[in-house]
Length: 176
Image (cartoon, rainbow, N blue to C red):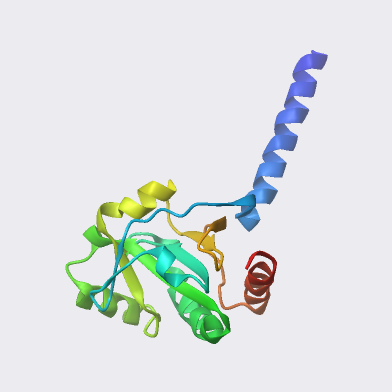
């Protein structure tokens, strides 16, 4: 009986700790990781790799038009991207190519949901997302100026909130 009671307490403590950690959804690594080299198609129809953005702190934001939290946060992503773009932070908004007929359709969708100023990229056959091991949206990969992954943010956020932007600047200062 005592063993069952201790097990129940242990499991409850684990669930509480998991729930608390999940609220933030932030995972910063002890050491940087290599970034996959798959190409993305930019809305200008040119191909880019995440390594092409060296010398910038990159937020590679994986999203889907079929993901309600992703769509809800588009306006705040757009606002944040405009606030940080001149301070060394680059937002790379990435969605699966199979969701779109063409870039014009994606542009209309982004405009409709308040992301009219942001550049966007498509991930052909979700190859880059797969190489990162990303199978859910929204999911943001944090990449330092050296082109290394330093962590991830799972889930949606109020990206244009001052505290969130300050946190991004803190990560940028600490990890390059």
